[in-house]
Each structure stands twice: as C-alpha cells, then as structure tokens.
Image (cartoon, rainbow, N blue to C red):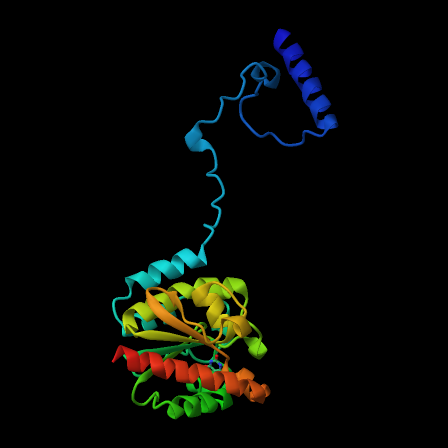
Amino acid sequence: MESELDYWGAKALLDWQVELGATEAMLDAPIDRYGLQDQKPKPARASDAPPPPVRPKKIDPIAEATKAARAADALPSLRAAMEAFEHCDLKRGARNLVFADGQAGARVMIIGEAPGRDEDLEGKPFVGRAGQLLDKMLTAIDLSRDKNVYITNVLPWRPPQNRDPLPAEIAMLVPFVERHVALAQPDVLVLMGNISCQAVLGKRGITRLRGTWAEAWGKPVLPMFHPAYLLRQAPAKRQAWADLLELRARLNSLN
Ligand code: URA
C-alpha cells in the first residue's frame, strides 16, 4: 500500500515536471540546486585567468636606423642594412635603393636630397637633368664622379610624385647618412639644397647658408644651391659659381 502511494506520488511529480517543460532526463541522480547555492565558486587562480592581450611593441624608427647603421662596418654592409630597413614607407613605392655613385673614399662627398624618376629607375644618384648640370659644375673645378667625387642623397628612396620628404622621413634616415659619411671618410661635405642642410646641419635657409663653411660630424661642410634650383633660376648660377670656386680653394689649401 505504501509503495503504491510512492508510485502515484512520484508519477504526479513527474507529470508536473513534464508540464513545466522538463521532457528529458539529463542525469541518473537528481541535483539539489538550492543546496548548491551555498557553495560559492572558488576564485580563479592566476594561472586560470586568460593571458593579458599582447600589445604590439611600438617601434622607434630612428632608434632602429641608428642601431642598423652603427652595426655596419663598411660601405657594402651599410648598403645591405639600408636594403633591409623596413620602417620607411618610401621604400614600398620605390623601384630601387639609390645608395651612392662615384669614388668611395674621395675627398669630396656630395649629399643631395632624394632620387627622382631617373635615379629611381637606374638606382644611381643625380643621373637626370639636375645630375647632368651637377656633372658640368664639377668639371668646371676639375672634379668628377669618375675620378674624385662621391655622391649620395639624404633619402635613398624616391618620394611619391617627387614630393618633399617629411621631417619624420628625414629624421629616420639621418643615422644612415651620418654613418655613410663616417665610412666614406671624405675631407669635405657639400650639401645640395635645403633638405640636406636640414639633415646634416639641422636647419634650412639655403639662401642664407650657401657659400659659408659650417661644420658637422667633424667635417667642413659647404651648403650650395641645388642644381635643380639652378635649372629653374638661372641667375642663381652666379652664386653657385662663387661657391664652386670656394670649394676648389678649400681643396687646394688642404693639399
Ligand atoms: N636630386 C637630388 O637631390 N638627388 C638626386 O639623386 C637627383 C636629383
């Protein structure tokens, strides 16, 4: 009799649960979830916590360039370090790295601005119209890239549409220029135009700076008008001629 009541009692309970929507048995034994409430979840151990998100490390392109340039102990390894430098976006738009031309170790090192279209195609500095004028200027004082001049640029990659280099681009490439000078060991530097004055002397104002010797990186430095400017402003050739004579006189005095 008692077991019959148990049976009907249990069935009524089951029917009630089915009515509530519990149509499937999940476990063999019931769980008293009210009783479970007292068991607070254990605090997660540090080792169970998900690792903090990894933030990408912020790269300082000037520090990277300085490290890469300092590690170069000769001109070929400097060139390789520049080829491998990935922090300047100009590299992605350029066809070639324009490293240098002329005689490494020459007494005169010319620093121009940046490759243009012709230089980008050939991978050599000053081969377009401005370069042809530069060659004529050098010949006039018995200098030439075939004999006694070494030529490079502040930027080894052509800026898009020949736009002016950005200050950040100049700053990240200066460590390579400085190392280039240290490895090429010229007696004097000639800076062509404002961008190279900015890179080497830290200031612009070519009209004021040109023709006056300054010093940078332990070398005498002569700023001059850029040949591309002389192509547009023929009257400025007169001052450029005076500056070339000044360069010749300095070289003669160093003999
Ligand atoms: N102008 C520059 O400053 N450099 C070059 O190589 C060509 C044009």
